[in-house]
Amino acid sequence: MATLSQWVAGSRPRTLPTSLVPVVVGTGVAAGEGGAVWWRALLAAAVALVLQIGVNFSNDYSDGVRGTDEERVGPLRLVGSKAAPPRQVLAAALGCFLAAAVAGLVLAAVTTWWLLLVGAFAILAAWFYTGGKTPYGYRALGEVSVFVFFGLVAVVGTVYVQVEGLPWEAWAAAVPIGMLACGLLVANNLRDIPTDREANKRTLAVVLGDRWTRILYAACTALPFMVVLVLAAPHPWALIALLAAPLSLPPTQKVLNGAAGPALIPVLGETGRLQIAYGVLLAVGLAI
Image (cartoon, rainbow, N blue to C red; front, side, top):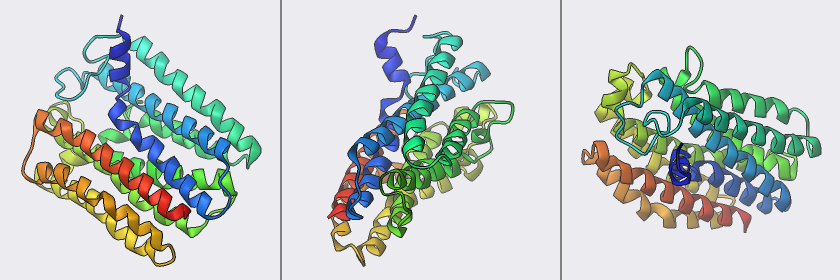
């Protein structure tokens, strides 16, 4: 039986900002539009959080039963390390998906029922990232999915459930948030290139190779600050997001200087802190 601390580690807490930051930014956009509804924002945060945890447990299960995680460098995987039986990890993933579906149902009931379709696609994308016979995460499409669901869908969806409209600021703000979320995945997959290649897991990092993956990571952490300049034209206070720029330097330097294996683990935490700082500052700037 896995201990509580192992279950917490298996939920991969360093990745959780990826789910909450888009909700914060979307709420900032909604506040700027004069229509923030805090209980809906909190419910959207709950959907995003439990869905992210469900994704992490689902990946743990699917990679574990395939044997992909048997020689793992990064954080604990419950199935791969044999800390928990696969059926328990699968049950945890399905329980999280169910909780996200219930919370999403409430949001759909007070806004529009087509949100159920968006939610269904999100859950399917979460499962088939590494689950099923042909997981798209093994076909170099993981970053595309992260950009879509943790950028566009999460930010724009959060705005919609509060203002019941789709202002252009929602789409513009979703782009840098999606990029930073991709940065987390790129750093994770860069670390795992050797083991993923051996397991025939063709992530985008495996396809691009070491050098271009490092360049991609640098782009994911730099381009969000350029998008701020676009948002600042009608929303000058958005420029305060530039205060987060110094946080991008340590992880980017590590990646570009050739950090590999365990040396890349701190990059995940640093990228998460960058995403939090950038997202909170951008949200405040757009809300003012």
